[in-house]
Amino acid sequence: MTYAEPPLREPDLPRTAKVRPTALRTGWTTGACATAAAKAAVTALVTGEVQPEVEIGLPAGRRVRFPVERCEVTGTPPVRAEAVVVKDAGDDPDVTHGAELTATVDWTDVPGLRLAGGAGVGTVTKPGLGLAVGGPAINDTPRRMIGEAVAEVVDLGEVGVRVVISVPRGEIMARKTTNRRLGILGGISILGTTGIVRPFSTASWRASVVQAVHVMAAQGERTVVLCTGGRTERAARALLPDLPEVCFVEVGDFTGAAVTAAVGDDMTGVVFVGMAGKLAKLAAGILMTHYTRSRVDLSLLGAVTADAGGDPALVAAVTEANTGRHAYELWEAAGLLAPAGDLLCRRVRQVLRRFAGPTVTVDVAMVDFAGAHVVASSGRWPR
Image 1 (cartoon, one colour):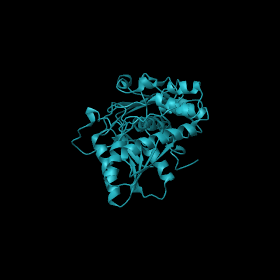
Image 2 (image 1 turned 180 degrees about the vertical axis):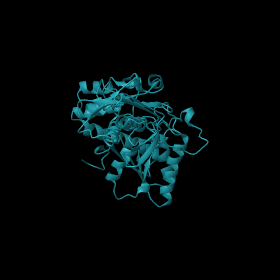
Image 3 (image 1 turned 90 degrees about the vertical axis):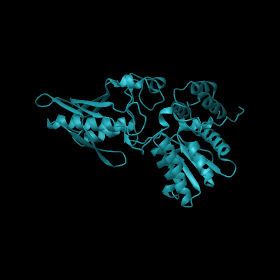
Image 4 (image 1 turned 45 degrees about the vertical axis):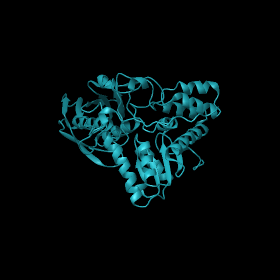
């Protein structure tokens, strides 16, 4: 199939993200807040005492405390408890800012943790999200965080606890997200890979990306490694262990801004490490990948599938996939992940080389959704 180079586009920021008069302020993910609510409620269930605050561990090991907005215990001895933690999203323009993450807990007869979604938490109805169809939209990291937090209070090998996470008005909040398009119905998603919300979507974050490149250049480094988030940065560091920490820049949605800064600072090398969805957007020539300004071009992924040797049925399935991740899973199931992923990485390299100009070398790697393994590359890291 003939490959036509896409036009290069760097869409403007959303209007609400353009002006930030104060410095960036981080916030907490829905996953961290749900974890705090769950631990507070389980602690109240065990002790019979209302919990005014609670401490949890974040995935990176940091311990943080959350105020508990409301905590109630029912029965003597306690048979049910409920706790509410209000989400503070910091300076991120997040529709879930102020959401009341609510955990309702009771005992079960079978040892272990049973986690469920209540009112305001979306239900997964389509594949491609890494979650069971029919189950609650609570991602893997929050599930693990909740399990670890509950295990700090009770021995889950000895007793059973049911935790139901709900979000009042969550269904209304979800109308302002892309959840319905992704097949998440009835509420918001419980998300987060670090527990911390960093305002990737703001003009201030774009400025901080550019500043990070300038700082790197000032130290004499000439290769910048662009990562989309914490998981991809961990993978990139494992891939390039000899580079100093300053070379790794979390660009979020602002790949174009980072590359422009790198060219202006006379960088000689750009490495991009990402996952399937961001790579698909970049391969389509989109250099600012905020979800309100771009979508994954599934027809492009269908073309990549065909070029990688996929049969017509697989090409059709990828073209109709729910998400970039869904396309990735279809490739993987068909045994085509490596060749299709390599082709996608090479297309991204072509786009970035056109954008950066001839004086900069570009390498691209795709990692799995845990950020644990490189599954494809533009050629520098053969498997």
